[in-house]
Length: 88
Image 1: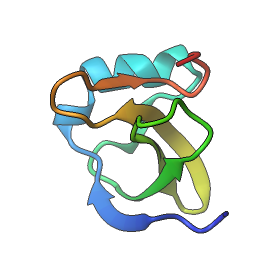
Image 2: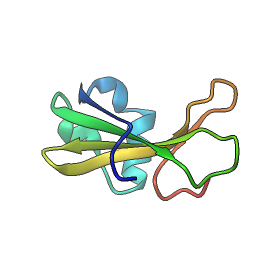
Image 3: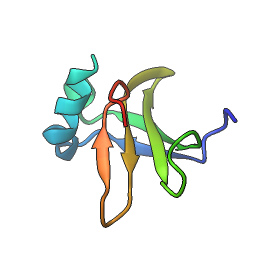
Image 4: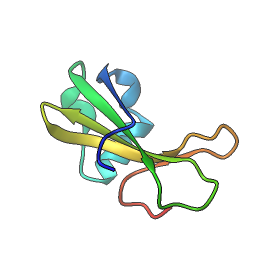
């Protein structure tokens, strides 16, 4: 399954700069250079995880280039957000 569940146009905002950009820097990305620019956020469902977990992968793409992303569990009770290279 290579098609995203969702693709949304976004503007890279200052709110992405703090905690989220630190995660990006730790995996070789830096959103600072894209502040104020448009990007597309693609969301994929991760299917090879523990049974019952709802895990998604987000990919930020600008002009066809991957500029950042994360793996997260959007559950309100025990959610987490990590970089691509973190084992979950």
